[in-house]
Length: 372
Image (cartoon, rainbow, N blue to C red; front, side):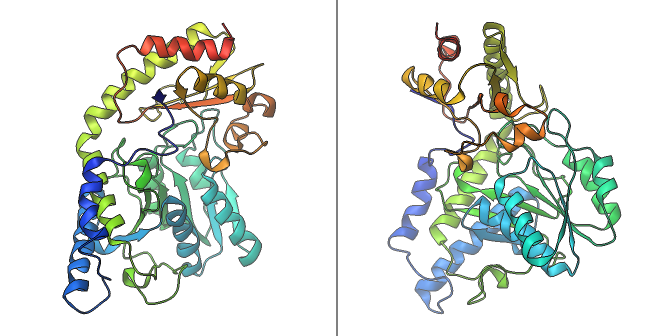
């Protein structure tokens, strides 16, 4: 079985499980408790926070542990905007549902104006388009670093130069790019990450938000996470997240180079053998492990079932939209007809070893589409 759905989730790494184990057993303390058992947990939590901050090039106090990428994105979009006193949000129509539905919530219940800047046929937003969307009351620009469905990478550094000049905070959803692309030097004021994309357990995540950016909490209670996210912290999860992020960063350059070559061979093989196949997303400015296609005239769901029968696990796009009969909002925003968008299939490679017989798996993928 070849697992090619790493954009949806990844297996937990053995090193992560080993690091977490003490805090699921002997060192079980509540980090808010003022005794030795609690202090041991607190020390581990703060060490994990510092380690995450080092990888991100931020301060330890900037790191807020969350339950995952969705909560991190909600906290960034709602929390920064509600704390700003302003009433305008800028994003794009190709963002993850956690961004788009946060924007919709703010629009419906708080009267926030939302500008969705257009993207090109590859899913990229230009710095000029961002600049044109900014207003005096703009509270936040929120963009994904790399798209979770098509893998297209945004030029975040260039966009950050625009937002910095205007004095508007920039939030970057780095859930898909963490461990594959550099996260330092982007110029972002806030970054969202999810542990289960990195080899940590589901239910772990981080919003790293610079201290100068006001943030209204979504969860109220005991004031944990410096008052930005109340609730007893998952110490084991924080430790596991830190280890997974460090490992992914240490391997990033070599792993990215390797997977880029694998990805390009896979894409070329499919495009050469399937006349109706169209690559979606940018041909080169894309995540190292993402190969996404539409197959005109073929049922995407039928292809997925046939792929699994032939030993390949893949998906039709975002796992968060699985089971929906609606075409991908990302592909529709790229100008792809809805009936074509419904034929999409996404293959996402990860850190698990890719078999030497990649050609055989390309052939299996081709056969699943063509029925030959």
